[in-house]
Length: 254
Image (cartoon, rainbow, N blue to C red):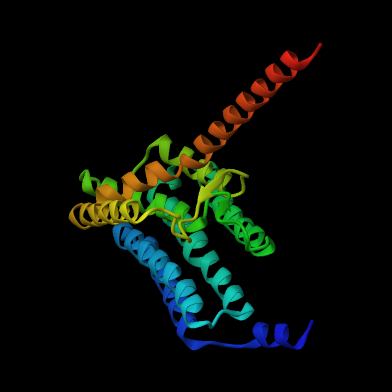
């Protein structure tokens, strides 16, 4: 390892790490709330943890304080805030009545979150999109489901087979090869389209502020299946291109 790489791996920058630790604090508080049966509080704590998780990386890049130490710290905190915390929340909130199928689903969720983070750290950071469902999005799906049920007037624990299926599905999607948009880099658009995108984001923000329990659930319901749907679209597009090339070769043949 060269000297600059050693300095980058060993440097500690307090500012982005403070946001990372804040995300860990929210995850820990979510665990305590889930154990006490305060499922709505636990869900909100996970969502706040996701906000801090999104801030720390951007702060590090904007201030030029990225480091290997910060990257590893972020992954360890994510394993708690978006692995253990939502896994326990799902278990105490909806999976406990299913016996071993319930706690195995919760464990599988925690295990696949850890595998997802390990795979993300081992991949080169050149892709604009995520390979596999990001663990904050998976945790947000569980948290938004809790908040949506609370909006429907179901504040306590629930028992429905769809939630067991949801946890197993999220576990699969996190370690799958489906592509998910990362939204890390703004798309290249004209000034007119950029203004339209700004207005659209403003409207979404207003809707979230007006009905957060509903809109967060809707956003999760749209984002979670986007990976498989995009994969099916790419497969059909590939088959269409292959069919077009085959027809062209057939016409050129003597």
